[in-house]
Image (cartoon, rainbow, N blue to C red; front, side, top):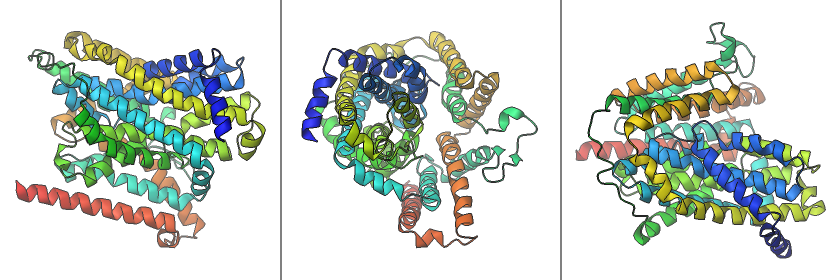
Length: 493
């Protein structure tokens, strides 16, 4: 394996591969920073350009886009409160708060370092124990997926800011929205009102764009004549050595969580970011800082979502099962190159597998360097006048919503959720639980009903399957610790 890795590293720095790798990472960062243009879309857009390329170069470029795209989403999330990708939705919670304090450069440098730690650790784990993780992921069936989704839904109480009731209200709204479309088992239309565009449900990207980007644009529009405080106290200082020592344990822990979650097919970077954020808040001695500019919260979200990059390739390369949407596109790229993902890939084409592994190591280093070197440029965005930024945010939001399916209906969804988000912000109801529930709701419902069919209507799968039971116990513990923390906070005030 070590010999193959050295050969792969040599290939990664060759004139045929290295420029392609840098292009992929840089392109991924740019695409990820644009609202609506996700890492999945970036990989899909560039896929046709790889048809005439050599197999290793093609896969390296696409994986570079993947790694860069996940990090790129944090740039707009931190600077504009507009997640470039769903994976960056949790980054908004603390990243934008730091920008409001004039610490955008510090927030971006923390995001870059945490993303690097998450991506690097996940790649190392991918190289070292890919078969073991793939075997674990193979044990997941409907009961385990339901328990995982249920555990994820308990995070709603954690990200509910000051009021658990308001957070649960927002989560309920999200769960109701997730039921729109065809029934996952019987295919009966639900809450579609005869509108064909609703048969496939409500796409999460327009919802994300509306709740975070358009609602924030409307909020800023209302404050247009207010004095701009961010620019007055804006600092170009990057993260300090003290910050690094503070976020490193959280980043490493979140990277391990993210890699494990990424190895489970269907659990993507968005779920991983929220799970890692919740875990960091749960164990923190100062949980009240989360949501108000906590550097540990920011690091947890970024290390968690980037940890998925290596984890999602574990089932793809060893079993031929994609771990998330991006891995599904990469599966298509492998097939186009005449390769069959699975155990035989390691024996028949080791140069390609280890070329990918080595290039992922280099891609994460490139992402860190580009991210840190570009901070001065990125930060100028937060200093731009609101009168200029508001139309740009709205324009990018509309283009991003339209580009998903080339549909004006998605634009209408984004605008509608933008107005909803604006109203909820006025009422101090958090919007993050809505997005989280829309992502996890279908996963929970579908796998619950499949589990009940598998066990002939019995709920025994909740305690008869060890992995499912473990997630159920984690969900109960998560709820208990969150309620206990809120009671302590209420009694102290």
